[in-house]
Length: 459
Image 1 (cartoon, one colour):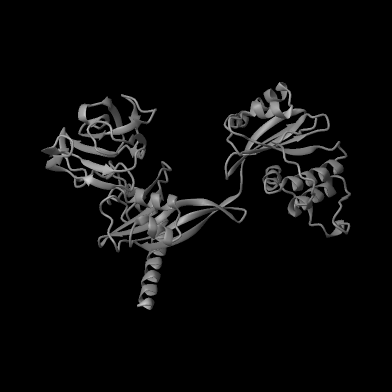
Image 2 (tube, one colour):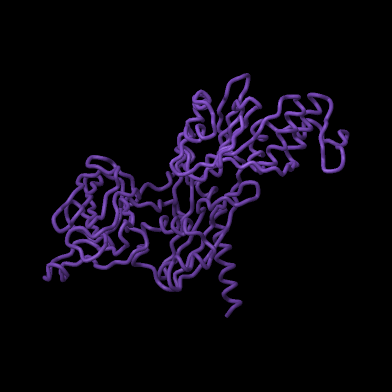
């Protein structure tokens, strides 16, 4: 069956991928005793090939390497395999997902019979991942000369891939992991205008700087507390696959100096629960039971006060909360784990969400534009989970979040109220904590020293 839709791109140029070629030829030399392969101008000398044990790759290694091939290279290797096995030639082709596509639509456009799709979806639990495909995803298929599907390969994400192959007449689906490695990187910066600008000058991605703000967000209000001259240093992971950087990973250790006060955090995984959190060098949790601010990188337009002139009511009244000015649609996060006890309109507050946190604490979020569709009364939420979006409903002159924090029903200033801490590292694991984190803290010290030396040389 010929796949001729525009979703398929078949290139005529044939190349040989060196790693796979050697692997295929070496395996064939043991199975068949003879290696026949074509190179650009010379025949390979089988005596020069490495021993079978040295070069024989596993099945998943072969599949993993094939994802690095271009389509012409993959087809060239398939021709070698078919030739060595003395089997009819097979053809690799690509399907590119368009907006609104499903696997059913792709197969129908390609001319596959419905039974082939049914066989794919029944090939194993891993095949269910094909129910979620996205525009610009590329799915590779291998068909025989009768048009019957022999294999399907799809990158699920940067680290995982799906392989469906026909074995003994039946399709079998398996999910595999690419070989990825984490490398430690470091960066530092001093704030002159904004945290984002300092991060950009230090070569740090937005995701890393947002994670940095999240780690220290219980102690530092990044909407109010940031000062010119504040500085940061951090060690973080960069994730690589086959020598190519895929993305930034987690922060391992970090230091933030805010208005002369030094805050430090280090990443640690609990050996029993396997839960990973950030702690101070002494083992105290960086995570408090409440976030200091429920929106990221905004400005305070009105603080907590007992006497404020209301711009709409045009009279003085108490303002028992904090207003955070932000763009309409900015996500609002739950300040702590809790339960939704109110969702709806509340007079001048407009659209409101109220969360109950244990028996003592409640938080209120007002003037909302809209709610997270998954949020409903009685539902539990996690700290940092998006519950709503900034708006200007009710008596509001512009988009902002009005945020209230109450202890036993009494309004408290969210900016200054003392926040309860989470659990520290258990005493029985403190030795393990010190062993695991001291190398990272030592690297942070070294980075701080090098930064000081560099500054001294410029003076």
